[in-house]
Image 1 (spheres, rainbow, N blue to C red):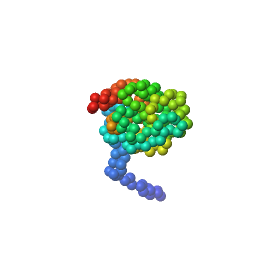
Image 2 (cartoon, rainbow, N blue to C red; image 1 turned 90 degrees about the vertical axis):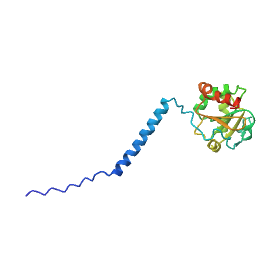
Image 3 (cartoon, helix red, strand yellow; image 1 turned 135 degrees about the vertical axis):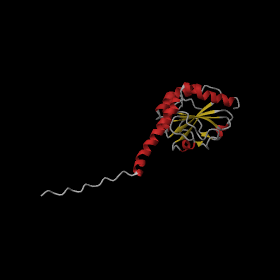
Image 4 (spheres, helix red, strand yellow; image 1 turned 30 degrees about the vertical axis):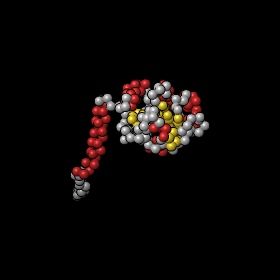
Length: 198
């Protein structure tokens, strides 16, 4: 006597909701990848991320000097002293900051602007050693040990630089280490606009 065949579990058709849940993230990823590739093809520069602070007064800033360093700290009043300032956010533990340092030293020689720093989440001993080894291009350095001021400035990571006009308004932001090419192609034209009242 033969055994009766076992009932096979019925295969449930895949629901439309599950299909969409699987395909939607893939479609979103593909769309973002296409957008990224198009911006690269058009020559988009990832260091020039738009900032909501461009054209607005610099955030309220009241930073004490780096302990043991014979330089003043940085305040809001300093940023509206009548002369454009390049505010560079840096740290001794930041390898790209070391890479950009010679560029900052050359910029410090430009009489049209004053170079100031925000020392981000750093130890005073390390900050002093960094400047002692590489040189100090800054007229002022404010210590930001908690990173709170950098957040107010919209900093993504170090290094970042902000060009502030003589009235304390942020005119330009550069993300990443400044290079001679970036200075010539982006920073200097912005400085020229300020000098010409633009």
